[in-house]
Length: 68
Image (cartoon, rainbow, N blue to C red; front, side, top):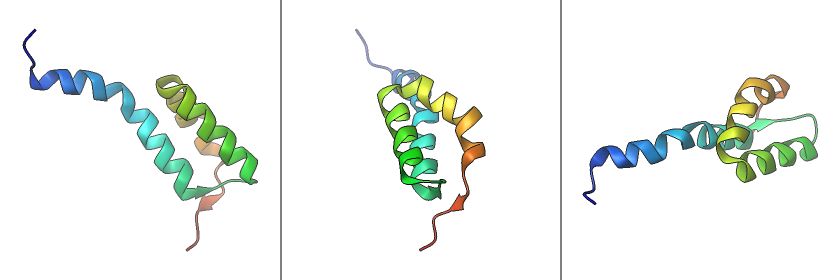
């Protein structure tokens, strides 16, 4: 089998929602730490599906960005 550059794109494209969701969860505050942990577990253990679910439903539950 010959390796082509687009093979990387085909493999990485479905992971974009998951990676974005993890970064968004990590950088924003929720009502309580358990809610953040639950979203992280969902996104990590159900990679593509969990990321898409978070994008459509979880983003609305964010209180704001984490204060440094």
